[in-house]
Image 1 (cartoon, helix red, strand yellow):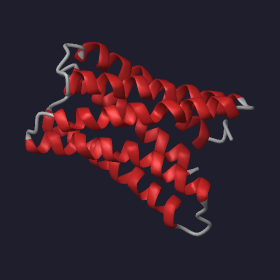
Image 2: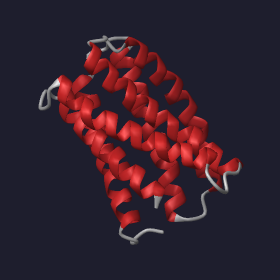
Image 3: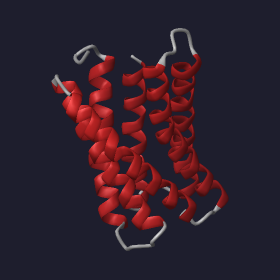
Length: 171
């Protein structure tokens, strides 16, 4: 259920961040969903890493989830402080590179539709983080494309699977 909870709000924040990048939401207002989702995924990660029954697999899950948490908290910080985002761009490169072997390992071990979806999601997230690197650190003019991809991934890799997990359609 924690994965469903996390993905549901990851979907929301990706969709809303995409809308923000398209100029539909103000800088200070977008910080709210980023703080909430970053805080929520941080709490989930802490439970996975330090809660009852924590093991190597749950600690790995926590480490990977924290990539999302830190990204959203950094977006919120940038929006509230007026920072230009170059630091977040370089962090996004680190995450994009990290997500590639996660995607490969997940796809290699996949034996169910859910596991295939998860591996493909990691590949998609790697591309999105790479685009954030190019947009923020290298200042490439790809905001509209990045925003559109964030909205699409928000629906397909976050909101929809999160909702299906929460409602018990996926297990």
